[in-house]
Amino acid sequence: MAEDIMQKIVSLCKRRGFVFPGSEIYGGLANSWDYGPLGAQLKKNIKDDWWKQVVESRDDMVGLDGAILMNPKVWEASGHVSNFNDPLVEDIVTHKRYRADHVIEEWLEQNGDKPFYLDGQLVVEKLSVEAMSLEQMSKFIADNGITSPDKNELSEPKQFNLMFATHIGPTSDSGNEVYMRPETAQAIFVNFKNVINTSRKRVPFGIAQIGKAFRNEITPGNFTFRTLEFEQMEIEYFIEENGWEAEFEKWENWMQNWAQRIGLDMEKVSKLNVPKEELAHYSKKTIDFEFDFPFGKKELWGLAYRTNFDLTNHMNHSGEKMEFTDPMDTKRKYIPHVIEPSLGVDRTMLAILASAYCEEEVPGESEGRIVMKFAPHMAPYQVAVLPLMKKDGLEEKAQEVFDLILPHYRAEFDVSGSIGKRYRRQDEIGTPLCITVDHDTLQDGSVTVRDRDTMEQKRVPIEQLLCVLAEHLST
Ligand code: GAP
Image 1 (cartoon, rainbow, N blue to C red):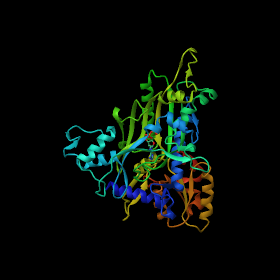
Image 2 (cartoon, rainbow, N blue to C red; image 1 turned 90 degrees about the vertical axis):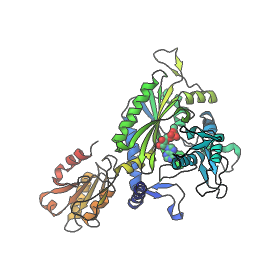
Image 3 (tube, rainbow, N blue to C red; image 1 turned 135 degrees about the vertical axis):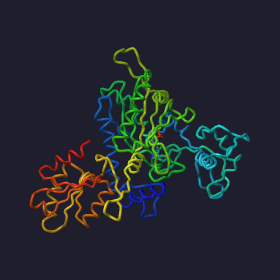
Image 4 (cartoon, rainbow, N blue to C red; image 1 turned 180 degrees about the horizontal axis):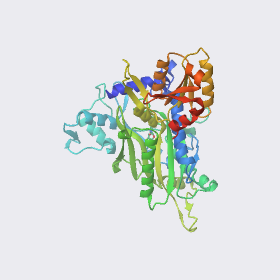
């Protein structure tokens, strides 16, 4: 059933122009996706709202737009060269590769009520798979006879670095290797001093950034959930060490409220306090915001207390001072700590799609409808203007109405097909309001406004239209 819903969402995305398979005319490229006209707009709405809320509406935040390619020393200092690994096993016959921890987790899910063994010993308490060493994984796989999905033997697990490497210049010499950034965060850390020196911001303050990140994921999948190339919206909020718990809580509340603001189904949002042994190499505390996707409950966003791990390491590796001088007490210099809310744009969009998707019966009609119940400020189009028919001057009148609306709202003009089919199409792309221009419009200067969710229709004089739209669409 859930798989069915996921299939329906993927097919709607293709059918209506939200998301297309990447490089489709060449047979595609596994796990790459292109955002179509509606998907590109939805993604932009997500990023615009986030930027507006965290940068433009606050005095303690500034923005940054860092480069994707950075000096490789950045990734040595950040710990990504040595620690940003996933354990990998290979099917020795097909040579397909799998995440060793995922293989074990899936085996545990299927064999949950059976006893299982590690190191020849019966293990009774719940295993934290992410915390297992390579050796433990190897023994676990051998002791329990775990095979690949194709039922073949698996190789010994080994660590696999997730960073994509490329080369600058015409030759691929070892000296000119650079990495595609695996997180946007590091551009913020390496520019910390530049921002302090050029802006008027003082700790506590934050730097926000939106941009692409790249990870050579061993097992990508589930549509746009885990891909090789994705966008992040990240904040590094610089604070004093004392009182980090209160700042962490403020951002936790902010994320919870923003989830609601962008129209996520809050019954599907939950939080997981990541166990100590599973924390990323830089984190002292992390909360995962999880979402109940049709394919299971999975991480949506992360909130981490990164201490002053990154600034300290960059100071040690680069020799540049990363200290902040307290303006109230000029003798006191310290390396600020950070709270990091880290959000994936693509995953956010997937959660919005899954929250919005509804199948409904329509009273008096044999066929039901699919309707995407987006929050009005997230919907790709907020208004559609539909002349009842092309002739009798209705198209021209509708064009006048469209010209009135377009400077204020994201609007679409649609003239082709029966009015019923056009309403269904607008329901499927989640347009909150449809405005129909009919013969009465020519007589009395009023139009029909149809509400996407209730399907109720009311007549509105054209001169009051912008006020009525503002009532429905304002955030
Ligand atoms: N700077 C911290 C950081 O990058 P992360 O938990 O690895 O933390 C943050 O990533 C967010 O980025 C995730 O919660 C998710 O929303 C998104 N993300 C991470 N890997 C992804 C992938 N392969 N595909 C799509 N989104 C991803």
